[in-house]
Image (cartoon, rainbow, N blue to C red):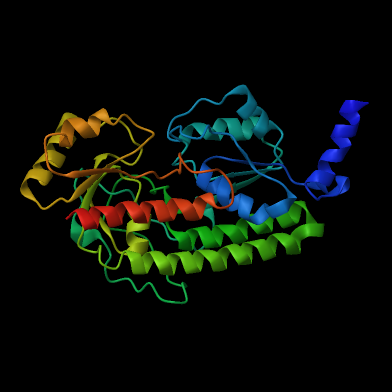
Length: 321
């Protein structure tokens, strides 16, 4: 009896009728920034479930049984792309074949770029000429300057993409839960408005960082760079975060020694000893750039906090010059 009373009291505690809880779409998502965007849209109706452990690299992963269950039980699976998680195609088809699938990098009218080639990036390849207008209707288009096979999948770093994804998520949830479609659309609209304000704030904060040159651990940041007009000079590892070759490390060291590199950023998902081995004996400022928000609280506020955290690190780099 005690269990049953607690069971039926739970919906009252969270302010939702029991019938509403029963109809909430079950959503499985891949990484914390996507979890945050979905949570923004779901609001008080429910919470998405991560199927990649927070803190793990999405580039290579083995699902735990509970995470496989999240896929198996999902009505909707939302993930960035097969380019980010090439191992995921099989589990999604096998475990969530009957669910709806939303691959965010395939959403229409988003900004996409090809992977950059080489350990060091040509500054000329950074598009300083794009007009990041106040209406946020810009389209960075496709980067044809590089010929690395595959699309750079780190598209969540661009808040313009995130705004478009909020609408796509709301559309999927509304089709699964028509009675609450307006609620999801309203949440998406509020999320877009908040991201526009955040983007303008970060643009102002980073206005003095255009000439700041930094090295990142792996090539995951060009969407953020092009959204906010800052420039990574190179990456220790390629975009899939695989171990760098000795030649690549040598190229990075040469750049640091010969050019005016202000900072290098490690990542919490990967071994910091690689960064220490390359930069430990230099005066280069070593910070942490986290594309996944490992140390942030999961939920609707994580995405905004993630962009703010990245902007903070670049500001620290600029101030260290």
